[in-house]
Image (tube, rainbow, N blue to C red; front, top):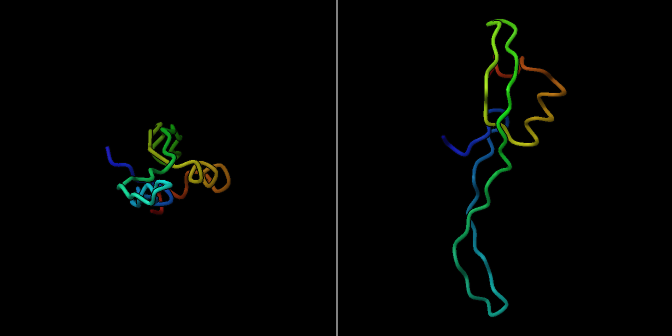
Length: 70
């Protein structure tokens, strides 16, 4: 599965690890993705999605209507 949030669209970022001697090596910053089961009222079933921690807060605030509209 991809490392992209279904709610916020957050993706991995790339950058450098920089040592004290200023040596640079590539690194990735991954989003904080969690699996979350949500109830879809229209379809009367549970759906499991990968969502970031910020996306979970959005779901708590606005509900699963976000997924239906997106």
